[in-house]
Structure formats: C-alpha cells, structure tokens
Length: 302
Image 1 (cartoon, rainbow, N blue to C red):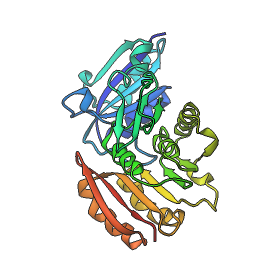
Image 2: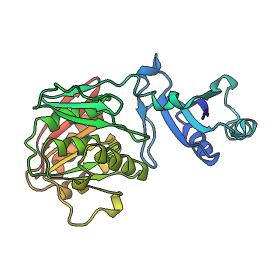
Image 3: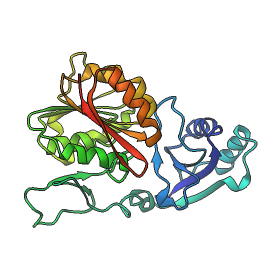
C-alpha cells in the first residue's frame, strides 16, 4: 500500500508550530532532519524529548500519512499555521511501502564495535562461519532511534564491549531501539532496565529483545514508572546535553557506588559544562572520548 509523504522545510523557530500541526493532522510519524546537510545521508535523524529544542537552525520535517489523506486539507492547514512558509518549502509525494521499510536497511550494513560486538540489521543473516567469540545483535529499530550508525551510539557500544558485564545489572536511560541494553545482555549482563519517555521506544526495545532471545532479562519503564529501588551496576545514557545536565542527580542516585557509567549525545563544546556538573554530583574518574564532533563522558559513580 502506498503512503503520502509530506516534506516541509522550516526554521527552528517554526518547527514547534509545524510539528504540532502535522500531529494534529494525523501524521503517522514525523522525522526531523538537518535541512542544511549537503546530502540526505548526512542529515542525521534527531528525535528531541518533550519540550526540547532541535539543535539545527533549519529543519526538514518528513511526515507520513495514509495514501488517501486530504491533500488540499493538509496544505490549507499548514498555510494557515505557517503563512510565512515559502511554497517551495513544502513537497508532497507518494511513496511505496518498501521505500519506508528499506530506507535505513539500504544504507545499514553489519558493523563491528570494539573487539567482539557486531550489530546486524534484521534483514541480513550472519554467516555460518562467523567467529564463535563474536557477539551479534540483530536489530530492527522500527520507529525508535538507535541503530549504531550514529557516532553517539557507536561510542557507547564500544564502551560496553570493553567492560566486564558478567552478572551485572545495566540501566539504559533513553533506550530508543534498545540496542545498548540488548548489547549489554548479550555481552554477559544478567539484567537490563530500559527507560524512555516514548512508549513507542519501549515497544521497539521489547521487540528487538525478543528477536535476540534476551526479553526475559530486560524490563522497560517510562521514567515516572521506574521502581524506587532500581539501581545500576553499569549505567549508560545516550540522550542530549540538556536532559543529561538536568538528570545528573537522578543518575547519581541510580548508580551503585563505583558503577561504571557513560553519557553520550554531547557536542564537543558542551562537554566541559557536563564534566563540571557530574563531578559536582559525585561521579569520579571522568574522561572524554570524541568522534565526529560528538563526545562520550565515562567514569564511575561516587
């Protein structure tokens, strides 16, 4: 069945109005991308949390609708919502199922992180002769963020591969597709807790955990539903600098003393402030690792 894709280019100031209008119009999904990227492959997907502001000055919004959506009605509402919008900043086109199902798969090939961890897209079967020491995670991110292709996710996966996780409980705060929690379980963790403010992400995490035969050892929660006694032997959060700053005291309470932790989703210029913030909250042995302008902060709980 074909779908209707609406592409809208707006400024950061216009984005909240545009996104709210698209959701009110019944968009099945809304993806935000950097409109200033030179090519579509360079337009990294960004899914802000509730109340957060995108990092980009200009954004491309891709909204997906049922094929029989009222096109005139969509355009009418958007022009009423954003009367300053230039006509060439709004494009409608029909897309086939496979365009959406394969969009990420066409560019996503098996990737290695660290010494032994591999992430395979669900449509590619690992070879029979793959080294027995390798750990394979099969992934279909669905509509949730996190495939391993983004530097922030890669930094966290490599960090996990370097840890001794045997018997540990890991908390993955902002779990998205579940890739970090699932990788930790397959690397030896005994139990994982995935937390996300998007119920769709929790569904994707459960689905991917089932594909990887680790669902029995993984629990997921919305932030306000996390049990009061939840504690992490290992903690990872791949979100954004704003929430990382705000949540530092909560993260400190979730980490057992000495628990290894890693934070990512941090731009290089944001790292110094976060280092100060986490040192003040009792985290120790703080270090940074940088890739393509993104930073991972690691250390241990106080």
